[in-house]
Image 1 (tube, rainbow, N blue to C red):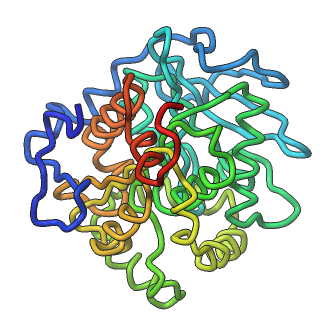
Image 2: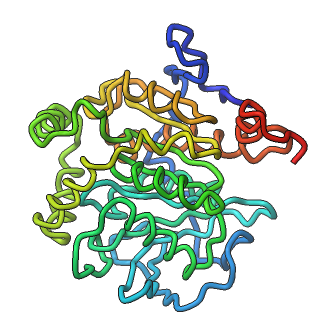
Length: 335
């Protein structure tokens, strides 16, 4: 049941779906404990059709055990992803992780590793980023969502749970609003950007405020990802992200959505996270202490635990958040 055992209600908040992770939420050993859980490549899970035009190759030398690289032809481009089979359960739901601005699958790997203990996991590089090929022009948020759905088609993913960080949350929201049949539920960690802060100057200040929370190895990964994608591409993508009024799309989304905010996140501040969660008909919010904007890398065990329990509860039989939202809207409850 939600909230999970490691979460207690945060009664001081105005939004009924808000919970706050207490000190007991951290998995002993954290990320280091997650890294040893995975085994060799297995066949696709039950939520995956026979994939077409997908070439599997072994991962790079520095990749995590149990994950492998996949290349898929999506239109004129080849898109790269890493994947892990996860446990083979009859009704298992795959997880797709969506990276943020200028980054790649490498940034998402700590959380991907933890989730792979319980789910089939895919971490694609969006077009123009990571190992994926560069399109002739920079894609906006909607076009990235289109590309992600096209990649799911080619890869054989009929429906998935999606987890994103930062700008990746904007891609997930756009996808959920326009392709509701492809997403079972969404987890939005540090979604960008509050309407009153959609300016280059304000965001530069916020990113600088978050920098002290990033470990040196994350800075190394980030700079390498920026080099691969190119700074001009990043700046143009950032411009599109600032123009994206994601809050106008929320009421169209009927699948359960969980907003996850780090206690010290200066980019996704508290009131914005609360407002965004309240806009979703089936929205909830979780606060993770002692974390900032990059929980997917710095707090993967806590994030994966909350995400997994949220998704598994959403998939339980009975009137879950999605059906409850339809009932609140006056729709037929017997469907």
